[in-house]
Image (cartoon, rainbow, N blue to C red):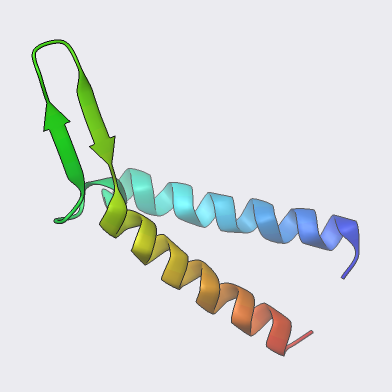
Amino acid sequence: MSLPKTIMVIGAVLIIVGFFMHFIKLGRLPGDIMIKNENTTFYFPIVTSIVVSIVLSGIFYFISRFK
């Protein structure tokens, strides 16, 4: 795969992930860890990370399959 194709695929994936995070609230799934104190907030989106990993694995599997 050439460099321009790779960059276009990465850009398309980022647009899709951005769409999901903005419109479907992908970053606030049940199971994401959020700790709020008086002055600080710690947020670790563990379930969101797992979902994004599964989706990206599927996308890259199909891209490599039809190469």
